[in-house]
Image 1 (cartoon, rainbow, N blue to C red):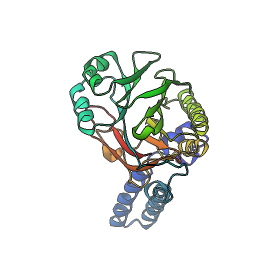
Image 2 (cartoon, one colour; image 1 turned 90 degrees about the vertical axis):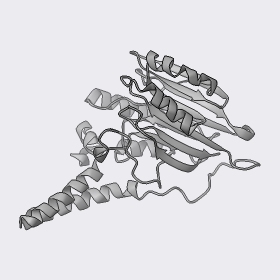
Image 3 (cartoon, rainbow, N blue to C red; image 1 turned 90 degrees about the horizontal axis):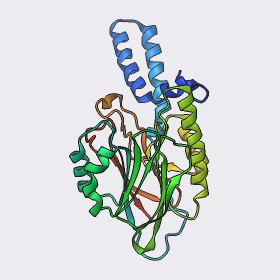
Image 4 (cartoon, helix red, strand yellow; image 1 turned 180 degrees about the vertical axis):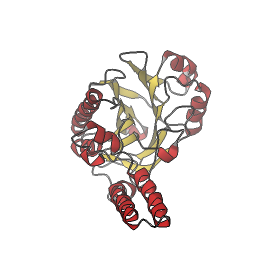
Length: 298
């Protein structure tokens, strides 16, 4: 089923679990050996090998060895920490999310699935994050961008995300360095129409990313896709992007309550003008997603 991911929506749902498939197949291999079923053991070993090879490009990925192609200008590199949190609109652990933000102290945060209750409960953070922008789409949920850094050119990123419109902004960091940021919550691809909408959003997102050549760019949010999907790989190629998680191992972010079955659907993507210093997940904070934190050098 996973081999049909590029042409069949159910295949794209199946493609996200090669790590789990490989582990289960290895367990099956041992069981069949104990049961003295060599044919089945050989089949299980072949399945394990196939899925290991499928996962290897992601698990063994390394950051680029060359510096960014765009000159930073005079002065030392400037670090900008960006976080993305899918708070889960039914979650009521408001204080845990606030504590996470206080502890990690990101310069900018993209918050996904924000409701009025979440906005009221986190309003006290406005003093630490005086620059903010919110979108609201179809339904009660929306997306927020909070920043310690001044922002300009802020608005909706037109990629067809109706439920939670995407955000675009330019952050002004130290020494006048600028970072273009896109905050995205892609459509949940659990049926053919919604899968098609997500893939169309990726096409538009790639166009906007490809057009952002003058500035360093980071795309953060819940993309509802893993690095194993051909649609994710196409987004990277067409948008001239790379995953900030490259070189930091396998980082499952969902579902937070069952990490042995976990997959990475929360991402930070960057263009060639950005150096990634670190990428890591945070605690779940009551959501079914783990937050992500990425440190960037401009």
